[in-house]
Image (tube, rainbow, N blue to C red):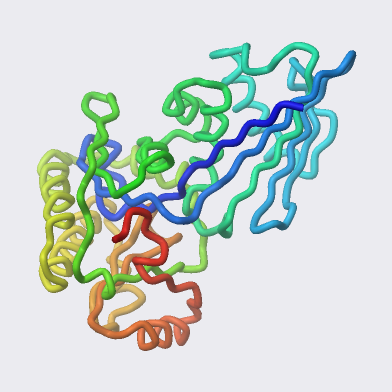
Length: 311
């Protein structure tokens, strides 16, 4: 029985949300969280099948069985998720049919070590793993399935924080060198609500606004964030970033709306209104935990425990 193994990192977009779709330079970090894909291939005489099982922290949450090479659904625990996965497989198969060998069955286990509701890359890590298995372009597979800028795909294989931008739709990725000396003052807090990336993108694309000046300033903020030497400067950049995206979306800043009494800065990450926020404060960890717990938010991570490439 042949075995294959792939792994992809989760992600967080520190700057550039929404405007990264229009060419803004974004700052993103790969995470210690990620998703693992294990494939066992067995040669058989007839009726080849693909058996798929998805786990979240060792808990089975989804499975399906497909006939090969048609990818016809035989059994599943969730039809909507199955239909999406079948579309991904068929797209990959059109690009490289050789990744599914004739006369073989496949036993696939996908395991993520984080809560799939957190918005840390359950989709992008899946796409990147399948693309690596099929030996095809992960950015193409993303475009044909979930959509988005592709920064999450870049993070999936990155070892350190990156700059990401689209140059006339061509992906550009550079090492950012983001390793703040004030990292002990940075935290990530889950807002308790998963935001749909596809829906956020759809709403943003409907906006009719001149974004050129905003794109330029956000790009500069991304660079300045990665070069910040002290917490105060970083907080100012967070605040200015929030002001710009607030104008673009015509929405209130998250701190003004929900955390106006907090000592420090709070910045939305990803689709506004859900997922995680970045918190920068001179308060200690226990104080930060206590404040957000009183708001009903109990998932709080220190920067250095989740950021890949921290040293």
